[in-house]
Length: 246
Image (cartoon, rainbow, N blue to C red; front, side, top):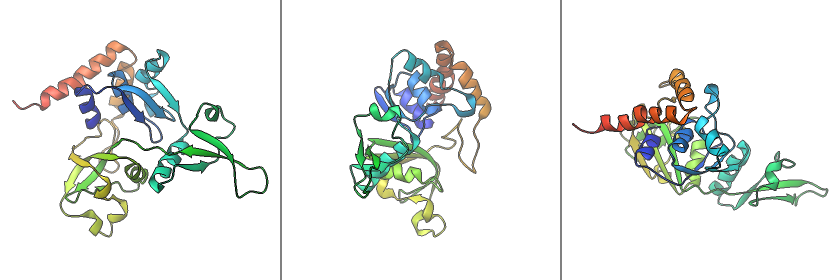
């Protein structure tokens, strides 16, 4: 979220967002601030706080392009890039309207089946930039993500990976037998920046939880353009001013 606020502050434009597999408040903020041209995702939602209001309005007004995925299709497309192949097969989407609307997906016959056995071929996705928040980074450039192994897939597939972290640790976490299984090697990380509470108002497992009250307040404010602008002023633009040296 700190990185998202920074993107808004620098007035980024024409971003194409990929949800792995869904998008939430970060995307809604960027869309409302006019930073986004396209959304590729299986959903955009504020979870328990309801719909993502700025996303919903932008879609209704035709202000952004939306490319529909399913959750498994997003992961499959990234895994294809991770494995260095142009596509991967997937079941479960065939027969839906999604297939007809995707020129980059193809239904083919399973070559290992004697009978009729259609299978969906999902083209690989190569993100330009992967961006996420993690608990720890270290002096060797590694990032610890614990059980969130989908983040490793994202980092392996992306051309560049930038990570904000709660804490920077000395040494090399890959040399720690307990931490190493949850580490993304610095080979796949383009840059790390420390951002304590950088996920707020979202949470980090075992560090701090989601600020449900703030999320609900955002959902209520962002239902109107005026309310959203007030939110930006207080939590993005004023935040920038308060961070400047005296």
